Image 1 (cartoon, rainbow, N blue to C red):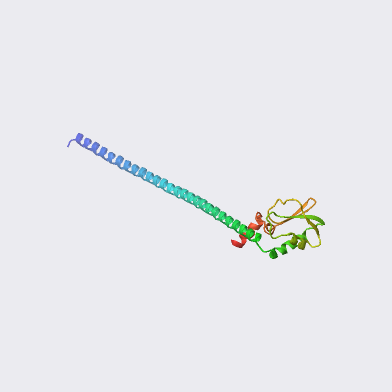
Image 2 (cartoon, rainbow, N blue to C red):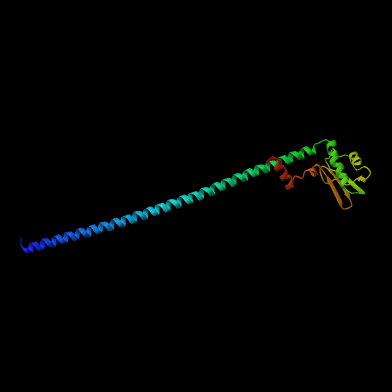
Length: 189
């Protein structure tokens, strides 16, 4: 071989070696870039999964809380309905109890009010509190029947000047009182 051929062969070998080195370096850089890209994808996926789980958990907790709140509200409304029905039942029973059972609260009512010269009215539909019952309950206190038509349905109203005292079975339990409702609720629930 001639020297030119040797030089050419040497140049070709050097070019081949350099080509291999460049390709090896390119492969190494490509692998590094692919590895970094793969790591970045894994990080993004991991962060995405964490965010998705966190969002799901938050939404799940919110929906559970909302559901529980709605359920508690329905439960409370049912409790209120039950308490109102019980109060109505109590009032119905009180309005229909015998006179001898209502006499004690009537005597207390008569003793609690301080009257000297009063008139009384019984409700338009009052059947139990009669004139004789009023005379017996108030005894020596000066009290006469009013000539005016009563403006209430049941019970007894004592009028002395500007003062008015009203007795009814509803006085024994105030159906609108929050205290009454709370006491019944405590007994039931």
